[in-house]
Structures are given as C-alpha cells and as structure tokens.
Image 1 (tube, rainbow, N blue to C red):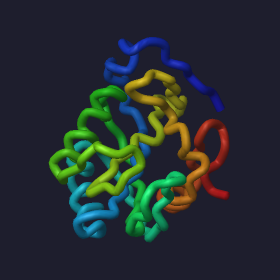
Image 2: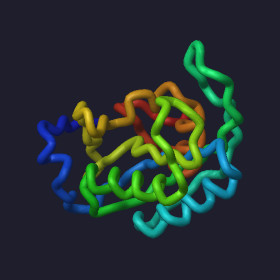
Image 3: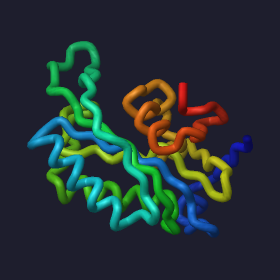
Image 4: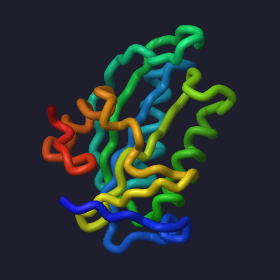
Amino acid sequence: DVDVTVGGLSKLLQPPKPAAEVVVGIGANMDDPVTQVEIGAGKLAKVLEYERMSRRRVTAAEVMPGQPSQPNYINAVMVGYTTLSPLALLRELQRIEDEQGRVREERWGPRTLDLDLVSYKVAGKEITSDDANLMLPHPRAHERSFVLEPWAEVDPWGMLSGKPVRR
C-alpha cells in the first residue's frame, strides 16, 4: 500500500491519467430521503463511469452535544471511475447537492442530500490532501460504519488509508 501526498491546490485541479477510482458516500434525512438518495445516485451515475452502488441503509443521525435531534439518514456508497480532478469532482458533487435543495447553514445539520468524496485513487494509489477545500481521504470515514459497511458490500477488497474497509 502506498499513500501519495498531494501538495498544493494546483495538484487537486489536475485531471488524473488514467481514470481515478473514487468512493462517494450518499446520504439524506430530509424531504423524502429514500427518493433523495435515489435521485442523487442517478445524477452521480451520469458523472462516474462503471459505478457500483450499495444497498441503502437506515442510520441514526449523529448529532453534536447541544444540537437538536434529527431524523434517521438513508445512506449508501457508490464506487466508480472518473477523469475529473478531485476538486472538479467535488464541484460536481456540490452542484448535485444544490440541485436537490441542499442548504449549508448548520454544520452537521439535516440534509436533503449529502455527497461526500470519501476516497480518490489513481493507479491504485490513494491521493491524500489536507487542503481546506478538500481533505482526502475523508477525515472521518474510517470511524463511520455507514460508510465502511456499504463500501465493503460493493468493493470487498477496498482499502482506506492502508486498512481494509471490510471488518
């Protein structure tokens, strides 16, 4: 296993050669979350090539202390390939979220649609970034069963930061 650290924003703007394998977390807990996940996945399938999507799962919302409770989330993971750069893909994910009415008023607040770029690999090498605009791999993915379990479903040999996603 090899980690590649990307320095500077310019590296996150360059398209990969060959196509990058990406993992995208999909979630929603507002405005008919099952439908939101399906619509989001359909739009994401137009951005990625040869995509595989996990089954949907119901997940309890994790809230910060002092935050009001939230409805359960519907979560899934999609694995696919793209020739978009990491930041270009992030812009596409945010565009899809916006089309579905995503409002970014409260951190960790309820969402109509949440698309997280979890992992981005080129030629099997995980791209890492601590850029404020895009942290790769997703900084909390390794703690989230609602990411790891569906990822393992569609990619049983998947790796995140050198560790298997299948537990």
